[in-house]
Image 1 (tube, helix red, strand yellow):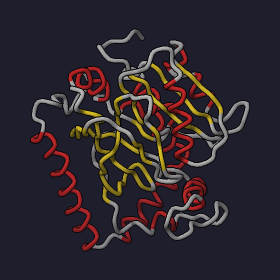
Image 2 (spheres, rainbow, N blue to C red; image 1 turned 90 degrees about the horizontal axis):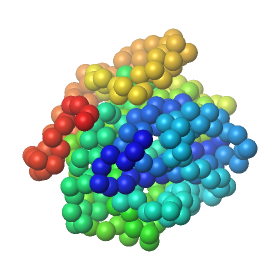
Image 3 (tube, rainbow, N blue to C red; image 1 turned 90 degrees about the vertical axis):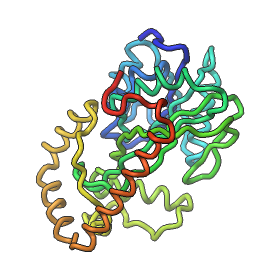
Image 4 (cartoon, rainbow, N blue to C red; image 1 turned 120 degrees about the horizontal axis):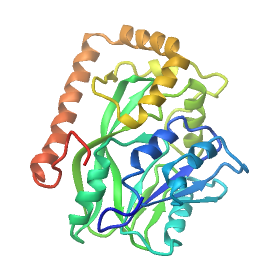
Length: 302
């Protein structure tokens, strides 16, 4: 795909040895918004479970995939090794998209990348958005959280902290848009969730120790039944085939888990969830009032 705006956008992505069920959807969603994809493969395998999705992506088809392998040390090191590949590009990008393999953008991401980013002055160093965090099944979310999305390239940017890593040396201030996208990383089998939480715990995440993968059950999801709420909006186009495949494979488990969550949500829990939803909606929509001309396509891609 030829570049279609006055800025060049790179995307950094890190994958491990475990299969990322949403990777294909994540890549398809940003294919028209990103010029080059750099991947840090931490799997230690000649060919990981994620290789097929990377090879089938639009980035690979147009020769815009840059993949290197590095051993996993911690999350900051993982991000820094991916960013080193951005610094090694023949021409540095103007902006970088921060993306995890279980995050799927909506159709509006191309508008943000190709129409908004080129208009921003140097006083803006990063663009934040909001993310729906799904829990247990694609029908429940825990929250809508502000999320670091795009950042302006500079060669001395770096990531710190072994877990819950953060970026340092950003130039300028943040622009926060009322744009929302979707995080599906907690819609996985219990054993997968336990392994993921265990890795964070081993690196110092200050939470109670999660169960082993062998001992993981749906109880992990039911522990948060009192804080989740129904998701009633449409899922992004890019992920719908993936969700349909998961429904065919795990539909019975999803239905049983949904029923258990509903059974544990009493009137107080439902009221609290409704109040959180109202607060989050107001918080996102206030960004539209704060920057009334910055984001003009809230419901469609351009």
